[in-house]
Length: 250
Image 1 (cartoon, rainbow, N blue to C red):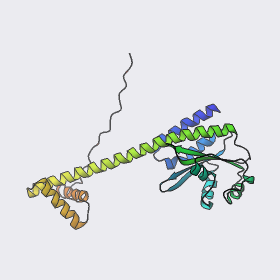
Image 2 (image 1 turned 180 degrees about the vertical axis):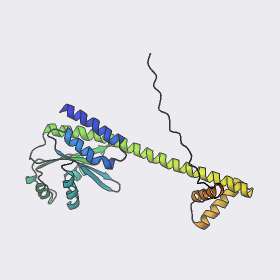
Image 3 (image 1 turned 90 degrees about the horizontal axis):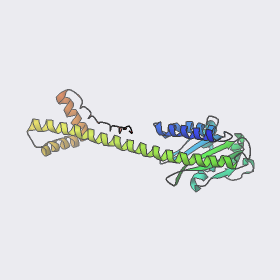
Image 4 (image 1 turned 120 degrees about the vertical axis):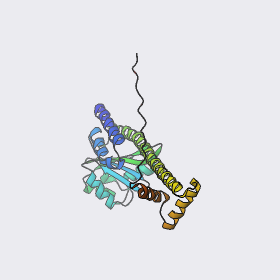
């Protein structure tokens, strides 16, 4: 079990830290979790985002989760685990009366027991790992401990992935801003040369034209450059920081 868990942790790290989008990786994450945990239960990952809830399931659970999401009345073990930041265990779904018709739907899918473990990032529950079994009383202490370790690891990975995505977005915004400034600077130089005016006067010309035509100053600047040079403005080159060199120890 320890070897499968360690291998699974390594796979999860690779999935979440090398992929482009966490959303696209959720099914693969759920598949990995299902393989690494004792008894290999069906697994689902749910994450709450600013624009709604996203989820992914292991191969044997995804269709069920899609259908359940369509029929859901808005409350179930996964959502309760997120709302309360506490694990939710349903050892025998046939004897469970919470969450309306949820138990009936799960029984129809062949699910007899469920365990939902909250998934936290920086101390805030932002999702849940839910495990499903066709047998009642399937989730032993060993499975629950493994689920806790898994969600702790996932929480760290998601925090890193989120920070990386945020930094990438900020970098892209900065590059776009610098590119716009470069284009505007080139256009200002053209206007200054044509009108023999100061930089401030040239900018007033650009701003006045952009307001009359209701276009961005940067877009107008690009048009001016293309008219004068016959080419679209070249994008500025941004040098990526070099990786630190490693020196051999003597």
